[in-house]
Length: 397
Image 1 (cartoon, rainbow, N blue to C red):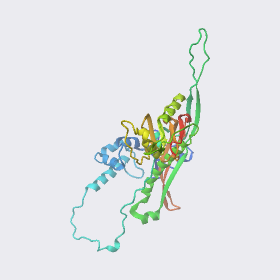
Image 2: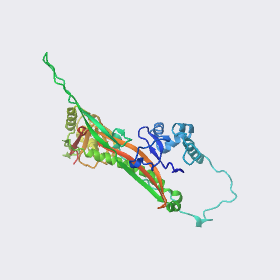
Image 3: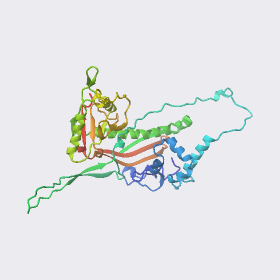
Image 4: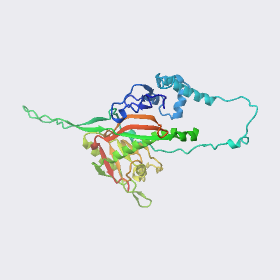
């Protein structure tokens, strides 16, 4: 990655959202010391802030007409092994990209070579490839992320046993009451993926460059795996359950729904009110369960004045939105949830994402004549208050 013996990768600091130079051999990644953030490269938070809601092509285009804006994102630190700063390097890359698109060769040639003249030299060209759809999910983003650069800590949950007495007789005083605190030890584990290519493969494949494409795809695989970790953590909460109703059950001619979810919503509201802490604000389930709810004839008001027309079925996986008929609650649909019969009702504060550093680096292995790109992250999804999560059973058959 760099022409330098001191640095071989980059690391994202979860505390300040800056990207720094990183040396994977300094011992920190193997538990022999703290991570070092000394040489800043890029303000990732600023980049995302300036180019919010843009794809990569749009982000690049947004700064091509104003190259000076890159000074707010990239630093004046020198690129290891190159006689230029990170800001200058970024400007050069974007300038050359713009010039390549704009310039045209208008010179006249004395002779024109046709495809028949050198047919023996023709090499088949890959015109394109089908995109690989890696579903990264929406579960991780539903919960608060706690920066955990030391990879270890404790999460404290206070308990409230305070009592305020009424009608206390004159001349007496009450016994004191107090609260308490429960602690949860947090250990953030390491996750890692890598892509490698041999020197010979690089020379034979030439400009196709599968290593870059696979390295970019590996980052999506990381997000997909973290989403699966969150799904497993949600489904592990089975201590508190309540019976649901089958949203999709129908009977009769024409077929109409046999269940009314309104009673279930009343039950859930009462359960959370009885906790004296937290709020009901999140549902999580597979996508089709939400579809069966919205198609429920009693939810739509079929047969009543102003009834809502039949809702169109659609692919609503990896989406979220309000719950018709239940204010203040977001229904998140993600097919990473394995259960096809149950859903989970909760307060978002019940689960936390603990995030350590995320690092990328390149290793040259002479023994195997290969280049390996490594993506390493430290991440833990943990339930910090199981009282705020209810498993709702049998909402689908």
